[in-house]
Length: 473
Image 1 (cartoon, rainbow, N blue to C red):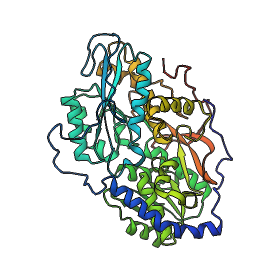
Image 2 (image 1 turned 30 degrees about the vertical axis):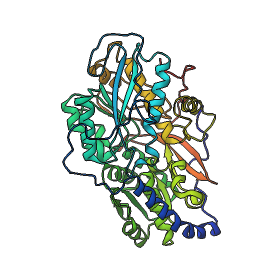
Image 3 (image 1 turned 135 degrees about the horizontal axis):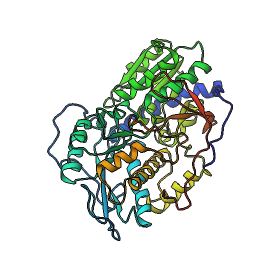
Image 4 (image 1 turned 90 degrees about the horizontal axis):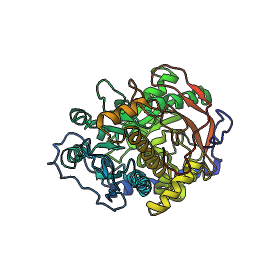
């Protein structure tokens, strides 16, 4: 893979011209309404939390052959069954995803992209003669539903592993269940540090950089670029928000955030939190938000004439996804916003990973509009294929866990994975990016660090390129 284009390190993102800045307020009224309507349509009123799970089998699932469904075609032979979900011709894995609910916009594309990449691998014979079948269950970003869905996948469907299940509050709800049943819980789609507890949860692994690593690097950028400014945070009211803010304070200093505002993903009224940010005189707001709440935050703020510098976690900054909320106002509201990435920006059309994944997208995912969510799903699936290959011709749950802990995986990441027997966290760092004239643009070096007080270092090794076949091996 060619390196991402580097701009001048730590350059200050361009500010909006006065006329465009004034236009933000006018645009924001429509934008805020669009975001609320979109979230409501996705079922954001459903409650997440401590309700009693429904009986096993009560969660909605996608069917085989659907846009996000499982591929269940048979293989051409292979080893004998060696674990639940393993047959001579198939490896059955499962995932819980927000196909509906407040996190559905954008994120509902991830499992379809995973399935598409597995279909691509299956068409070439699968892994050791076995086809990979992914069963996708919709949990609506509701932890109670996630608990039901995960029990269904493990106890009824008898999956070999869960792979890429999405969400901090949702996956937190099933950690103990998966541990008790010794199910590999691979590459959780969230950056919570909860996935990096190998002593407590030996079967669970992250994939993306954890939010503290991300926040730490974003905080370092803020410290250098916006020195003397009042910095605040706005984040989801769980590990997503708190881990991210903790990372920012590792760089800025403990207690440096003037105010830390949190939102509940079941409540689309963020007016009180935005009002508190404005009242505190926040000049830079670092946001740990899912896309719908990024749009709500920015739209609500602009509606009141509050226009700080936004620094947004990768999780909530995918430009095409935000366009779904902001529509024609996207450029006006996002110009100059800063974020980060740990895989190539999806608009880098000539990057070999994007070339590969767009080919797979066209062949097996109905040519879905290509964005960071499609890239994420395919990149995660690529990693699982490597893990399954390394687990041996007759994989067991223990052998795939050992394979991930051994590490050495490559893929679209700009930085290496941190996997080892003592670290179950995913990618080790990020590169900064900014919206410049309406285009997400990488800037500066790639950085690596950890979630403690280790130094932030530039990572200068060349990035990997995909094999000619597009399949690891």
